[in-house]
Amino acid sequence: MLDRETLPKRMHSIVLKFPERPIQHVKDPQGIYQPTSFKNFWRGVEELGSGLAVLGVKRGSHVGIIADNRAEWLMADQAVLGLGGVNVPRGCDSTQDEIAYILSHGDCTATFVEDKNRMNIVLRGLTPDHKLGFLVVMDNSLQEDETLLENLKIINFKKVRELGAEKLALDPDFFSQTMEKGDSEDLATIIYTSGTTGQPKGVMLTHTTFLFQADRTDHMLIVDEKDILLSVLPIWHSFERAVEYIILGKGASIAYSKPIGKILMEDIAQIQPSFFPSVPRIWESVRAAVYRNIKAQSPLKQKLFEFFAWVGTLHANFLTAFQDRMVSYWPPNPILNKITMFLPLLLIWPLKLLGDLLVFQKIRAKLGGRFKAGISGGGALPAYVDEFFRAAGILVLEGYGLTETGPILSVRLQWSPMPGTVGPILPGIEYQVRAEDGTVVGPGHRGVLWVKSPQVMKGYYKRPDETAKVLVQEWLNTGDIVVPTVGREITIVGRSKDTIVLLGGENIEPEPIEMKILQSDFIDQVMVVGQDQKFLGALVVPNMEFLEKYAQEEKMDYLDKDELRELPEIQEMYHEIIQELVSASTGFKHYERIYKFTLLPKPFDLQTEVTQTLKLKRNVIAENYHRVIQQMFQ
Image 1: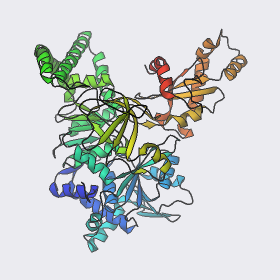
Image 2 (image 1 turned 90 degrees about the vertical axis):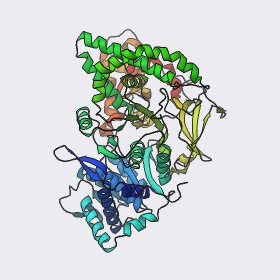
Image 3 (image 1 turned 120 degrees about the vertical axis):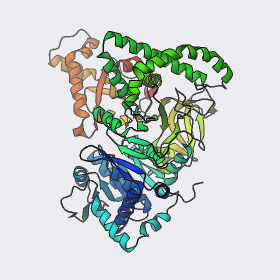
Image 4 (image 1 turned 30 degrees about the vertical axis):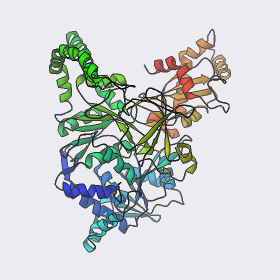
């Protein structure tokens, strides 16, 4: 087992092994990436950690990190963990109320903030009984080194390091000795994720959670110390965080970019990354950009592209079958597959080579010359997007997991990816697929995935009631409906939980949005939809009494209720109602807004679509209105 190893102990062992290798690549003011060595990075960790100790952080302290991706984030993470503290991270796009709740509920006695803007958001949200003793501004933008505000110290990041350097000058072994007291079962982080009530829930993860994953992805991801990971996803999300730990554990490095098309492509050209963790939306955007470029070409070039895309897809499918990597729910016959696929592969090979030369080689060149694989997580990768990259010869490995598992439960094998799945469940994880009656089903049968593993969370912080709903005798109910294959691979077919996951990886609880929309007298029922889409939509049941009264007052002409609902003036009115209720001014993030809606002709059925307690049967409604929902997102 992992014994008493912790994340900082693991990191320190890598520092000793690769002291001069770069751990991070960060842009200078001219936009040129500059490397930082493992040795210099670790010196910063020791200074920062020692400085935090001077300010009062100790074993068991909870420290917030309100910031997006930046070099200081990882340093803060390792410094807090090295002291035996627990970090409580959140991104800069969080609302003031959300940050205030997390820092308060998370019992944070200190917090890092990215800049003065985030500092002001934290300060405005403070309650009189707050527990914060100090704030650290990561970009060093305080005009004074220290500011005292109502018994709350505000201090620049560099000043904390200076305090630590002074302490280490007197006691050089302070940080290393403190770090050695850590244990693998110590709590490492509390990551807040939205709950069904709308209040975020704090997922408690130990050092074991992340070390367990790192040790079991060795055979899945082929990484060495020369590799560079391009970081664009929010580091506070467990997916990006876990992948970075895995990459750094091999002595490889991280370069920081932004998920903005022009910036991203320029950074890829400069840094030439080996790995690129991302969400499905970015992969879809890359594909869409290629097709937009092709449509600007001559009709002949468009036809050639379509032809070679078809050839590439055909070749990828033949090769997958030849290599026994097709989804299978019974033992495959490898000899038969190779015999039947050999001739088609041989015949199509010349066209495939020509397509690579004329089309796909140029696309691959956009990713730099060292690209090994993209890693897609945070939502389902659309089949057509997956198919495009396979045709182009660009490896995209789809993975799966939950914040509650830290998150990686499975990922396609880099050396043998199986399309149509999220890869095999990691070694060492027990899993069961349970039907509705609770019986365990085998390959080819659908059911809810339950897992049991050392990486599973300890529970939701201060929420034993919510913990008991998903953790039963050490088994975690993922809430996801899956079909297992014969080789431990998993195909995700649906979600039994209400959480909506957009293509960008944003996790959204629909109930708070629906409750807000229902404040309108013109709306009787609403169900937010958008699973695996770019944005949210809504099925809206209008209050016909109010609507018809409004139409009479406005002297609108219509033949029947169906025509009334479709009037442009009515559509615009409902658009304005929804946009006014669900907006930044009412506390919602940009990705929680409703971009499209459909006014339904009748209420949800009380027998089949609504429970006795008037809760929506979301899966039933989604199935009944499948075509309506599809049209909404076309």
